[in-house]
Length: 90
Image 1 (cartoon, helix red, strand yellow):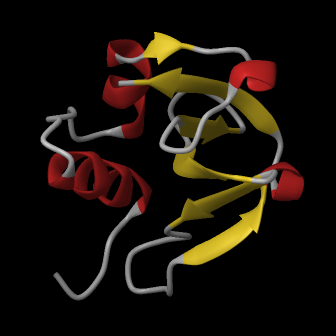
Image 2 (cartoon, rainbow, N blue to C red; image 1 turned 180 degrees about the horizontal axis):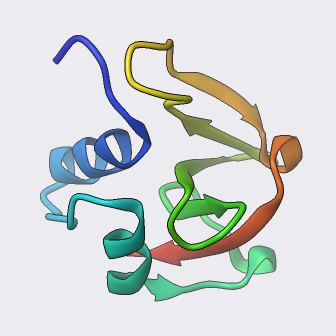
Image 3 (cartoon, rainbow, N blue to C red; image 1 turned 180 degrees about the vertical axis):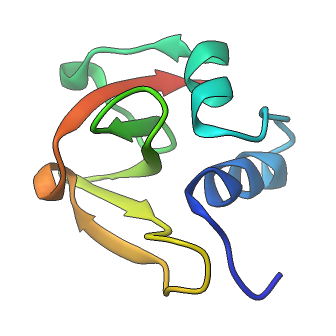
């Protein structure tokens, strides 16, 4: 595809690793096993603001990758660039 929204990026990333995820941020949050922020590992899905607004994927070293919105470039940002809500591991 030429672009992703946030949950589309996390879904495509995990699909490339052979794991199927639901489509929306809320569905991905509900389906994942919650992990503490102190236990984050690369690949964990990060949720900012709340459980249905925006997500991305932890890449390590206090950074995450996310698709800000459809049509905008994917970015690697500090984990705290937005209010951290939760994390899950598929």
